Amino acid sequence: MTKISSLKIAAGMFGIAALVKVAVFATAIAMLGLTTSAQAGSPGKPCTAAAQNQWLSLEALQSKVESLGYKVQRAKLKNACGELYTIDKNGNRVELFVDPTNGQIVSQL
Image (tube, rainbow, N blue to C red):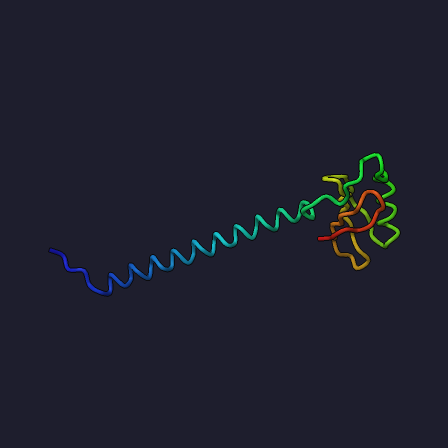
């Protein structure tokens, strides 16, 4: 019969505890990544409830944002928001979410 030393039992327990800690940490990081990617796509809600026939054109939204000092690289309408990928006055990339009815910045990333 093989004897199992207390050292081997302790090593096994610490190994399992470490594995559990790593699994919990990895799960937390994965959840954080999912939350971040969800926020990156939209501010989480539409920018307006107004009918689409009341929206400004994409070119008009772009002009309003440029008048605030942003350089627009790309713009699109998505989920009742204008999404404009811009460079700010300091040279930083900024994603703006704009109300398509008036050009007001609702949020930014």
